[in-house]
Image 1 (spheres, rainbow, N blue to C red):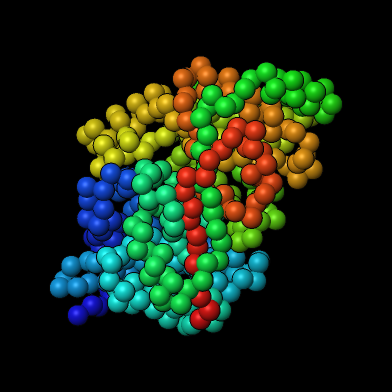
Image 2: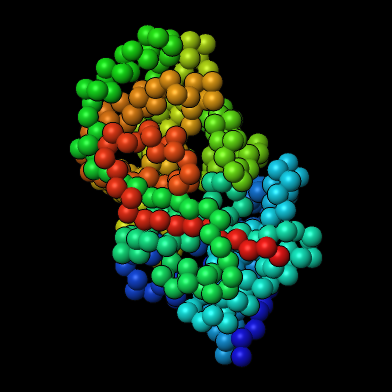
Length: 372
């Protein structure tokens, strides 16, 4: 018999976090999170997202063992500002048993009905900087620290339970050798002269901090027109700054400034921590931190994490300056492959930025939705 239990105490939330470690044990493609990072992100006293969002965490039990989990999420900014009566769900993992997935999703639906919401969609996190989508193609590729990995049967469960694809995401990669410097130099020289802009690079993390809040402001402006975009609050900026900035090589954060020193474009790439996280096995100590710091400096793969251009400067070729600076930094560090984070299949503008590098789509993922 299967039962659903809400996880509330610290001990219970830790069990919620650790379930995938059992489900994906010995799977060579799954990348485990750092357990304490996950616990912090679910802590209402530490993650500022809970100022405008709420979440409940549930597991499915069979013979007193956890066989599935799900987070039921309501983002009030989304409800009030976008008028989207959406029930979110994420951190959704389960054994290949339709009754398990059905009962977990039914619990989310029940909460949605109680709150007069109209549909449920997931998997997704609290905001646009969280993980998104269930993997539908590319199961034989290692995951990343900013995506969920899952077994092929996940998508089949959604379809059997009456869910429809809501949004499709593509993950692309390209060999760094495809990024040629000379064309970028020519275009950048023209753009700099025409628009009176300049690049800004860093070698020390501490030098980036004065610019981070403005970067997040630009992120909000750049992505405001995309469906389901939820802006990042002031406290969330501080949270993400503390959580991620020290893991990013300062050479991999690039800005473009206008003649008045306003940030008009930015891009962040991250070293690939996938193998390091697998070695860490969910723990920073005693050896996990060593593996992560080594990857920060030595990884030959990078993740193209974020890029944003102010709406007033889009379609002007500003991104060429960012790409040129990355080409210089990546060549110096011996980078071999560049992987892009999941991007909406409908976002043709972002796809056009990378077309000259001969990208290959190696993974696809989707969110699924259902009326409630």
